[in-house]
Structures are given as structure tokens and as C-alpha cells.
Length: 445
Image 1 (cartoon, rainbow, N blue to C red):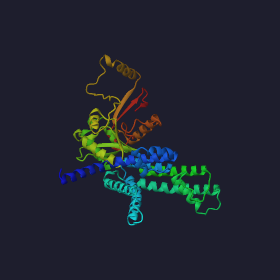
Image 2 (cartoon, one colour):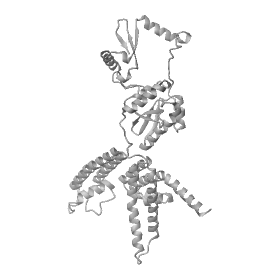
Image 3 (cartoon, helix red, strand yellow):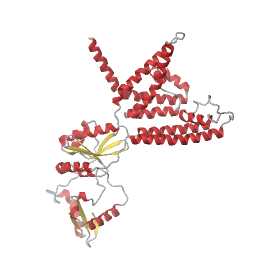
Image 4 (cartoon, rainbow, N blue to C red):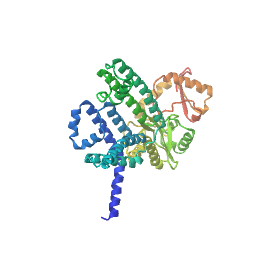
């Protein structure tokens, strides 16, 4: 193989390693967190685990015998798995400090002829440099868009809880300290160190003597502080589901041309949904984000030949925000297309659509339906059918009050099969069906 070919091969291997970096650092942070928790529980147990060579380097580079630190690693691994930019920045900061210390220690011993340079120190510094270089090279792999709201919330949560926990901790240490010779600054310093690192870790260099239950309380406060802060920082990006006027116009245009393909298509116009349009403008997907899930509603709108483009655009949005994609109430054709994009399909039921052009009550199989219709007719019931645009405003207000009274407080059918509104001026072509008894009283709509 030529030298140029070897260089291309090395670049290819490095490129594959960079692409795998999020997975590598996910497992690194996850295992570091587990080892930190185990080390806090039993240092002897961690020494036995360290005999497994594959975990020795992880333990040497990452774990620390502390419950808060262990939880920090585990929570950080969740952000790494979601490819959060904030998680990448935190990893860089974490590795910069030991890398700088390792390189400084190596350089210090190299320029001191009286002190030999330990091989282990050189290896450690080299490993840190390689890991940091891989992490920096993998910056482009952490593509999840940052959420400024998350950063603001995390800052507020951390600052508020830190003040509260340190205040409570300082009070407890001051009240229970059995060593009265300590300086005034030792109590808040001890409270902060125990809160961040956990019991059994610090305290000996500080002239403080408190009962162990105080350390446990400080540890619980610190653990809650870290969990709340990292939850706020790494929670999925949120978006208020609001159907903007341009989105509604795009959806209505697609429904006007292709709306007869899906009986649930009109429900894409709920105001608590978002609509993403395919690059060619011929298809769109209505969806809503709940927690970490982006849920598409019904079949994609528009030309079926462009559904793939709409799904790709929506999946790109999911990847950008670390949302988990899902779809509900889709038809058979749409389900097959979703499966092409990596989805699993689950059949929930059949759709019943009555074609009025050839529907009738004749035949043996329609006997029960025929009997039910005749009972209603004998009772004197009548039906009135109108478009919403044909109903006067005062009458529509009365119908809305009747609907609210009959429906009660129960949850409606769901965002994929209901509009969640009645009497909206934009729904003028919707159909209102009213049933009256023999005395002309409204009995159902």
C-alpha cells in the first residue's frame, strides 16, 4: 500500500471514530457514574471491579467515590446520548483540567533532571490528550440545538438551590459541630464540600466534627441540587404548540387539493399543533411535542408522492431537538411509508366510512340498523343538517352551550380526532347535525 493510501486509510478510521464519539462518550460517562456509585458504597468492591482490565482505565480516568458525582456522570450521559451541545461543552471542560494538569506534570519532570519521568504519568497525559482531541474533533456530532430556556432554567435552579442548601448546611454544621476551635469559615466550606462531593469524602482537612446524619442530609441536598440542575439543562427542548397563520394557510391549501384522501386530515388544523412543510411544498406533517416525544397526527397532508420529503423534514426537526418521533391515527398507506423510515407499525382498529352514493338499509345484514332507524322515526325524531356558515351567531352560541353541558368535563377523543373548538369562523364548511324529538326539543348534535 502506498503512503498516500495509508493516509487515506488512517483518515477514514479517524472519521469513523469521530462519528462513533457520542456513543463512546455515552458509555464512558455512564460507566464512570456507575463506578463512582459503587466506589462510594464499597471501595473494596471497586478494587475487585478494577481487576477487569477493560474497566481499569475508565476507573482511572473517570470515577470518584461520591454519590453526587456518580449521578452527575449518569445525568451527563443522558445529555451525551441526546447529542446535546451543552453536554459536549461540559465534557470538554471536564477533560481540559486533567489534561492540563497531566501535561504540566510531564513537562515539569522532563525539565528536572533530578527527577525521572514516570512512564505512567506520560501514558496518562497522552491518553487525556487523545481523548480531548477526539472530543474536540467530534464537535459536529453533537447537533442537538441548544435551548436557551433550558440554560436559563438550569442557572436559576442551580443558584437558588445552592443558596438554600448551603444555608441549611451551614446552619446544621454550626449547630452540631463538636469542635469549637474551628475558624468561622470552616462551617460554610464544609457544608459546600459535603453538599457537592457527599459524605465520607471530605472533612478531615477541615477542623469540623459533626454527626454522620448531618453529612447524610448535606449529601441528600447536594444530590437533589445536581439532579434538578442537570434535569433543567438536559431536558428535551420544548416548543409551545401553536398553529401559526402561515402554517394554517399551507395546511388548508394542501387539504383543499388532497383533503379527500384522509378523513382525519382536517384535524391537522387544531391550533395546538405545529405543521412542517416538505421542501417542495407539496406535503406537510402536523405534529405536537409532549415532553421528549414529537407526535405526528394522522397521515401526512398533501401529495402522497411527497410524503417521504415531509417525513424526512419532520425527522430532521426531531433530530435537531432530540425528540423521539411517533405517529398516531395513520392509514395503511402512510404506515408503510413510515416503516420505510424506521418506524414500527401497530394496528389499532378499522375506520368506518359510509359512502352515501350507494348506502341503503336493504338486505338481511342491515336488519338491526333498519329496526333502530324505525324505532327512532316512530318516536317522532327529526334531523336537521346544515353547514356551520349557515347557522346564525346567536344559534351557534346556543349550540355551543348545549355541547358543553352534554359533554361535561370528560377528556375529548384526542388531538388526532377532534378540533377542540366549535363555532370557529374558519370552520364554516363543517357540518352540524341536530336531532329533535317529537316536541321539537334538541336532543343531540
